[in-house]
Length: 199
Length: 215
Image 1 (cartoon, rainbow over the protein chains, first blue to last red):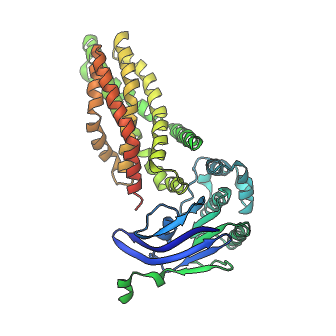
Image 2: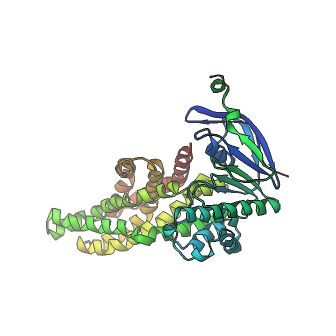
Image 3: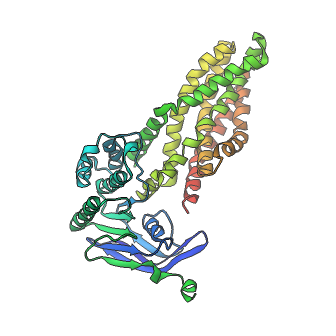
């Protein structure tokens, strides 16, 4: 089953075309890694996939629940971590998975700490835990490795592998190396608008 | 869907109360009501005559206070992105925010009107009319605050611009609200009509503003 498919998608932001003619499809268990230099449109691609932006041309087909990781954790600062995560889990209708998600990112000890006291890396791990707890089959991860130490990066890679093994798919945008077996590589510099390629 | 809406309302309401966010408009409302007797002088008769209108003006000014925390923080922290990515529409989010904002804003103002009326030496009759008018008018004020909050979210100096946007649009509420103090039912009906239009329109205006801000 295809979880998300891009068909000749063009992305325009602020009147400037970032990339065009991008096509790929993610099946169950699949993974795609978006690479390219800063400003080429990696985050825009993730936001297109999340439905936050509309493509200027082409179409995006997806009808499964998706979980989005952006550069913000989007957790209520004043709440203890477990309760902040539970808000999103309950919204997704899977209230039981928070403990498992915390465990997967080695955050169980921080469950009662208010989100505002977490460090950058811990916050990042908490945001990844939110993605896990959502139970959504499609994960959209924008720079998931930012701020993570070596151990946390390992946890992230394990988590992604587990998710794929259970039939989920991930779309990852990253400028730092991240190990994903059997990955569809999407190099956005191959999809620059025609005009810019000519220059 | 409706449980998600309820969930959002409860969250917004909780966030309005922590840190005293919901008490600030009330404090402002009372402060305006206290300042008027100082400005006008201790003439009880005069105060009783203008007092009802003063409370309306105070409610209008108090409605400005929470604007900046209605939409902007959730846009900045990515909460709205998360909700949209889950397939909630921007107007649904705005709808939840409107209900939560009214629940946090109106009841405290209605309660605060009691001591404020005592300060201005209002008759029981006038007080009852002010309370009925505020009950009908506050949904409209809350709707205006939400729509304005969504429109100015992310701008520098948002608070001042929000005031310039909201106050002229709130003039009909003020006219019919203060007009109802004479005991006319007609003014109350018009107040209800204005309030209804604002409540019906605000979620879509706010939703469109949120959507427009995404690009």
